[in-house]
Image (cartoon, rainbow, N blue to C red; front, side):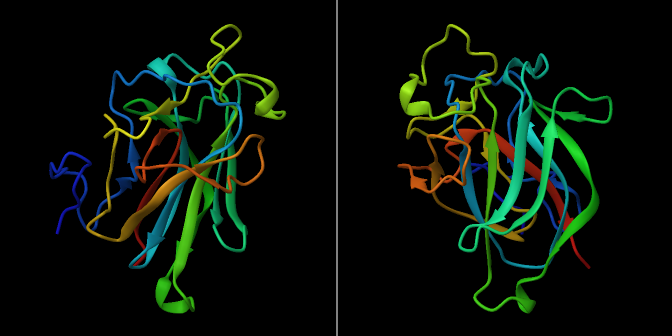
Amino acid sequence: MAGLSQDGIVNPTDAPGSETVAYVNPVGTVGNQCHRGSLGMDFDVVSPIKITSLGAFDDEMNGFKDPITVYIADRNSRYEYARVVLQNNPDELSIDNSKFVKLPQPILLDPQNATGGIKLTVVAYGYGGYTGDLRSKPSRNWLGCNERNGNSEGRPPTWYTQTGGDAIKFTGKSRFAWDIKFPAIIDTGPANRYAAGTFIFEPAY
């Protein structure tokens, strides 16, 4: 069964056996927030997959004005599976309004071999270029905001998710932090509240 976007439309590329972009930021997506802390979105692995690339939302698709860091972590243990930094390198792949870096070694995730399942978060930070404590600086201070993330502010976002034929499940209400540590503060949803971190995955076997 193909996965559904946030508006219920079946995405033709979201099917078993194909490479899938998990969090899709369509062409023309414009950022509306300058959150200088970390932003996270939760997902569970349902069937075996390989994560092959990590990526980030590129506001207006005009290149990153500051480096954006993206990583995949276990949301309970905080163990990091992989981390990349995107900063307009020649090897970055552009898809819609996101850029991706191919991992030197894919992340193999098989929930059948994990007691309690595989519960992960994709995390991104670097938007705005400030990496200290955000509480001392307003998140909507446009002056000096180099790269904006997207925030649906609780409404259905214009960006959407793809499950790769139900290989992963998007869950939770999204999360953030005031600094660049793992985002432990739960937001108010939806599960893909932010245009920020993303990744590409495919069936493992």
